[in-house]
Amino acid sequence: MATATAETELLIRTRRDLHQHPELGFQEHRTAGIVADRLRAAGYDVRTGIAETGVVGTLRGGAGGGPTLLLRADMDALPIQEETTHGFASTVAGQMHACGHDAHTAIGLAVAERLAARRERWGGTVKYVFQPAEEGGQGALRMIEQGVLDGVDRALGLHVWTGLPSGIVGVTPGPFMASAGEFEITIRGRGGHGAMPEQTIDAVMIGAQVVVALQSIVSRNVSPLESAVVTVSSFQAGKAFNVIADTARLLGTVRAFDVEACEELPRRMERIVAGVCQAMGAEYDFRYRQDTPPTVNDARMADVVRAAAEEVVGADRVRFGPEVRTMAAEDFGEFLLRVPGCYFFVGAMSEPKGAVHPHHSPHFDICEECMPVAVSVLEQAALRVLSATV
Ligand code: NI
Image (cartoon, rainbow, N blue to C red):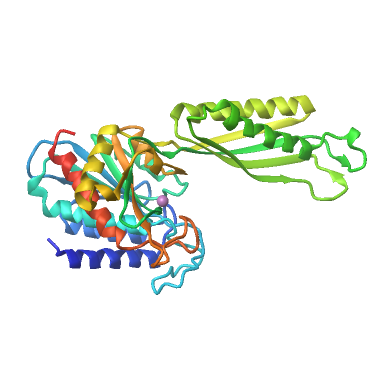
């Protein structure tokens, strides 16, 4: 087994190498090659090319029995032009690891190697999934459709997170990250002269009513004890100061923690759009796409992660409970929809290191000291699942 220093050095080197060579969803060929080589060298049975660029490494423990545990790291970068001044900044114009998936891949490889080095001590089977296209590409769902969940009993994953100070572990039972859906509303009225509104059906005015009325869903239909977001992020209509627009196009996103709310929110939205448009004589087209389900943790698996984290970083550095939730979305929820598991955060924010920017910022960076913490917590949680009856 590697010494702690050699392992940390390799972790950082791997993360920086991946950071310099970011690849967008379903194009992670170089990354997948590195992952497959390292997993094979550690003794895993490796399958590549799952959902284009996904890699799965399977390893049986030497102690016999036990569950099959899926561990997952995502590999994709974002279409963002990096604006940091690192020596290891992205070498690819317009592409950047601005969410930390470079760290996830490096951490995943280190955990896979640690588990392999100790395989005589645990039972069950580890299925290490390196997933493409987490960022809006539904990579998790594509891999599930290819059968990666077959025979899997439990699932674990983590995100390095600049919303928490470096080395703090955040986990909660129940809903952890929100669902994400996107909508497009087209309102068709009748254009005309800006001075003769009585001859027109004003798509701008109707669109404005729709924007305001949609806000009543969260304030009046969702319980104040629940969380949901309806954001209209784009309103496109009209071109001239004296012409009433014939169409308006609204785009936006919907977030919720609750699986039933994911179905109910778009139904309510369409009722509002239909009602406003009908009242004002316009026609409409409502399109909704559910991208990601909420990420909902199993209570017992959240307890396993909490116990592992307390062992590694101490109870005072573990935040447990709903205050660590976020309305951001994550397609690990696809796995948790189907098997009990837990997704958690390892804080990556550090002011002295300048790692203070939000995920998806061109200035995004992590405090690399969070990586060995993440490795140890995930390894300890995995060992608890593999060697016990969780
Ligand atoms: Ni991410």
